[in-house]
Length: 221
Ligand code: AMP
Image (tube, rainbow, N blue to C red; front, side, top):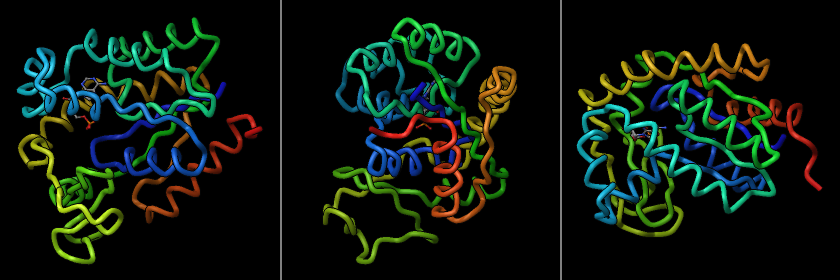
């Protein structure tokens, strides 16, 4: 089994850690949030349907996100998939189990990045990313060296998410505790839950995740 799930509320650092694992381990990140944002910016029918739902902080239907994941799974990933922001409901988790087992794959570990709500509000409301290369920044904790310019690629296309406001965040947190947090029990019951402290520095969280992966995944060839 080579695939992992990153669990945790919005702002826990799932995307940041997933991007690092893509670079260090050659894994493939599947973020349904990124896929939905792409769909809405490309102006497709589906994009129009999901835009308002996302801006409110509600969850998009299981059918839509499972369809997106199913499509991407077809491309395969020798180094393993990282599911980031998916599954978010028990129905999605069951669907993922079925899809992966049909392909002879499986979730080796579901890693819960644990954080408290007060930290999240501060993290999320200051967050912005580079539209060109995906680098993640924060007004207070990780500003760009030159205002308005990405440190990594030099782009000036720095963006804030429409749902990174305090009001939408409250709704996203409510959705998380109502619909997604039960997945912690789900993966615990399957014996695959691992917990890391998401309040530590980014590099310490990364080390904790690496330790989980070293124990759970086969060594790379
Ligand atoms: P994220 O970037 O993971 O925080 O996702 C942003 C928004 O996209 C969420 O607040 C939801 O509206 C929607 N979304 C992303 N992933 C899912 C999912 N697995 N199930 C339902 N809605 C999702």
